[in-house]
Image 1: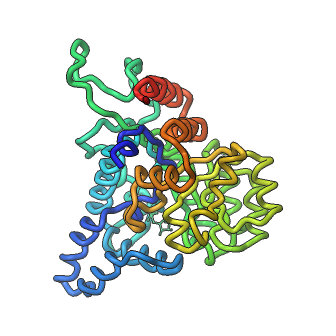
Image 2 (image 1 turned 90 degrees about the vertical axis):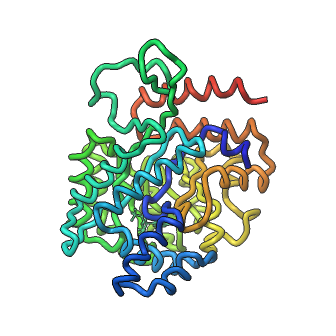
Length: 365
Ligand code: 5GP
């Protein structure tokens, strides 16, 4: 496992509330149990349960949201999730989350996002670069992925992680609520919000509801990534591919026509192996579409989806891909590096990441 932990990686499909560790969830649940808001032992059982169908996963998210939707918890989980990814050498993280309105906690979508940004600022174990360079003071950016605590000395170099944010639209939302999320994303661009994601229970809602907000987001220069093909829904898959998002997530229930369209459009796919297996979206790892897409050199990136909910990590996803599909260290390194081309950050970040990977390549045996 150590070899996969030390390999530099990019995470492009991670849901904030799905990435919380079990220990933090249980810690957040305990006081709610003490106050009679929840039945702690039942919640503990649900959190520690391992195998879940897709519909059970969405029930779990409703529970997680009860535990996390106050500003302090949002800040805490953001900080912890970024630190967890950084600790396994994720050098670029696109973290997605659904801005939530919760009147009983005095929370608006905006204040939810402010709590997320507070969490990024609170990270202490690693330097977090989330403000786009165009918004920053002029500075020396020649030292990729390490920041120096003073100009002369190189001994105190600290690890650095780039973080960019995607705002998710939940499929339960209305057109107006989706538009509110897009407006918020535009307002928060200067704090590293780069795009919009459409997620939430795939059997709920109609794609057409979100189209006006997604079109507007794209016109305004936000990047779009869409969950696509998590359940059989041929018409929606066609419509999503015709929309030409910059990336899609999953692509499990694709038919021949969908594959043809995807491959000719070269839309990169965010692959979440453990998530797909656990939710029975693909029958076995050997049958996973990773193999076909990889062999055809279709743009791909390995991701976790929900490292907490599915008890995985990005290093573990790399390990699974390497052992299941017979890929060596060099191929996995290339797979990781190639993802730089699909990130939603600007060219300066891409250049830093390429330089970093080129230096790291020298350490591969
Ligand atoms: P949050 O947006 O609250 O930070 O992260 C959890 C949310 O992400 C879930 O409530 C759900 O809307 C979305 N999500 C997490 N995992 C998945 C997934 O595998 N598929 C889909 N469609 N949505 C997901």
